[in-house]
Length: 437
Ligand SMILES: Cc1ncc(COP(=O)(O)O)c(C=O)c1O
Image (tube, rainbow, N blue to C red; front, side, top):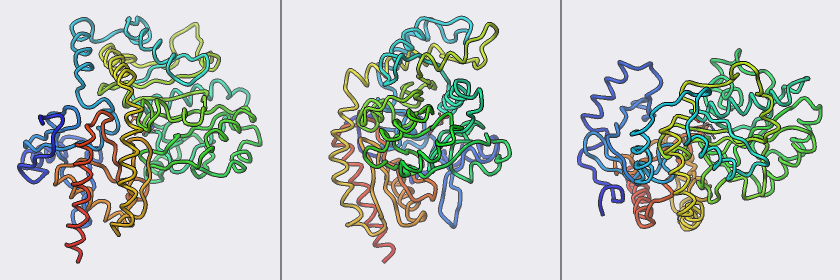
């Protein structure tokens, strides 16, 4: 098998010398805290592995090591890294127009992508608002909800814990983790009511009862913060509670959207049609683009006779729109949601044996190709992650307590390669176990 579809090949223990050198340079050149990798207790931060090339399910680092990428680049590479159709679309677009004029003069690919997203999303009478990052999409969703319901006096927002909605000030207000929020606590939207993810619907009704809550924001499956699946029927119940109390439901599908969990959107599992839906990550096939898809009547709050009241220089960038059109076409034509569901069932069966077989593992949760392995301690999760890297499997361990490792492969990964990666991961348990003993 060739690069893109091959088992790991480690030629120098990662991070290798070139990675270490460049990583040290970055530490010197960049603001601290944006290139930190969790190490172990003895060495709290460790140098990063610098990526030189990626294709399909493989990444090659600057030292020549080849990995299987079970992060899909934070969930972006749903169609795999550098999918040929995405690359061709970007090349073609690069020969015509790299940059448009944001909210002033648009370009045809933007029209095409807006049409495609409005038709695909499970949102009634949908319109689209483009963004550059997931966090910005969440900002736009919150601003839309506040604009549509905020006058007079429905400033409240319900958000859940744990949740991750991004790091900009507006998105941070609804993100749950205290270590992200605390330094900025004085500047965050003051009207956020926090409930536990999956909280009883009676508690949701109670929190909505005084009529001050304009919107509820939820990840249909919690991604980065530990891969949590809500009880069956919960999302539908949440949608119904919102409808009855006149609050808007914002589904944050930035991680879960475009097939990751086995449906095009995760709300589809329960036939939920949110008022506002955020997507990003996989949408761009590797280029930075995100979108908010919402009911037309809600977006009316943005009408203006003056200048746009939310925009950005790189709004709906032509390269990103071309890449997104290609990525979405691949996801649909190759029916990647169904593929994720099928591979996920087999993977889930194998992972379900882990808590019995490996004492370090407490619980395994997931759906489609989004899986979380919850370890008993954060240290065990980290050692396992670092051991995986050294054997050529890239994955991330994190979540609120640092105890959940995520398995998030490209949806296009060859099944045998995924099985090979899982075999490598299983091998780590026995070697760690032997070391412990
Ligand atoms: C559910 C969810 N919402 C929002 C975001 C923020 O997206 P971005 O990192 O593109 O700003 C993320 C990123 O991981 C996410 O997983």
